[in-house]
Image 1 (tube, chains in turn blue, green):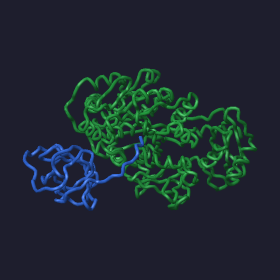
Image 2: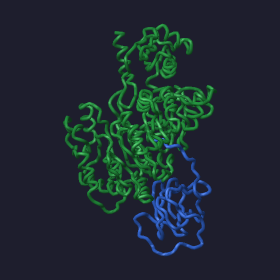
Image 3: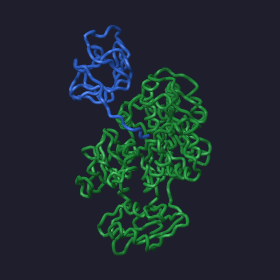
Image 4: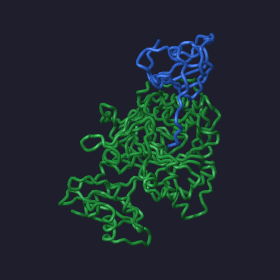
Length: 103
Length: 502
């Protein structure tokens, strides 16, 4: 369990997935990729396997992921092979409205 | 949250795509990432607290922007068109600093102690000469990414502070990652020291769009580059679009730029006649009006292509009027209009525009944050929001004419005078008045071979607006004084009226 902070980056201990926290809840949460808790960017990887039971979509670079309550939002900064979840709840892709290019 | 994240993602996703094209040199996103990291080492070796750029657009500009972000110190692009005295004063405010510049700009200056000068070619050569190990950006999301000196049209330039989290919030909120197609290309003709020049680099990078740089704008070269480089997107300030339209009117034959798909404009008030002519000459192009400020990390309101088309084609005055609007707030910001005593005003009521959102920095180095306790920033722009949510600007709050206690926006009088068939350009400013404190002064540029007497212009305004809006003083000039970004220098006009009166 960790207290997430907007702007913080995290990586999967197993696969290539990397995320940045866009919006964080005020309580501690468990952030997982493929069912395995994500780690800090400078932490050592723990080669192994994702938890096979973890459901959801794999992180795609540039997509944003939110939980149902819209309290936690992550930006996938590097694609990988695991599905993102918060406290065991699978995150879904946030639908954004396309804006015309302004600069 | 650091600006380099946009570059790292782009380089990871499409490393071989061209990021920057300038004068025959092409850098891929992978090259740009490597150069930014190498540039960060150059900056660290200089042991400074600022990276200044005093130069026109070149590949050194995006390299230095991202390199400074990696090194964790503010990037400060400066206006090379300022006077020697002004530039020396600004340089004195960024010591100890590394200044990336060019010989003709720096040669006349007495460089203050604490500024290390490095020529653009040298910085670019060093940044492209080696491949450093992968590095993580230094610092925190709250650190200053960019410091921009305001144009200082009303006094000593202020240093606007933009933090990584402000700029990245803007990018994440308005740009879809990797949304550009392989063949997309953005023509950047705004200078590096303008907020639009900075957001063009960040947005293009995050979208994965090729940036083509045009260091010195003129209409013919801009059009030629559009054809040669198959430009799909461009950003222009109103003066630039106006010159392009003039060029097309004068030479005929159309733009002949079939790849051009979208033009965004902002940075000043767009005359209705210019946008209408531009839409006529460039029928296949999507126009977007982007309203923003330096202090808000660029765009806060957008009028999109559909509203442009319906405004252009419609006979309904309510819909037509939208062409003069700056559109609706982007999804990540909120807008409020407040009256003189701070009360929130309803639809159609004019007051000062306030804005709130994570991209809103609203902060100067000297004064600190100008946000109120609830995060609202006073833009100093006057305007209103209609019942459909469209935002209309009337001009700067500082330009309001206070006539006997009544607030008069120059914008509405200028719009009316511009609609007169003989008038080609106009600026309305406050003039000293014995009875009213201030009164309305109009400076008029007539069209070639056209005439309109003072009495005729007064009658024209009187027939359309309240009598308090009728200009007391009218002057005719050959052209209005503009700064290089196309802003009318009202201060100069006010001074001239005051001198005439005394």
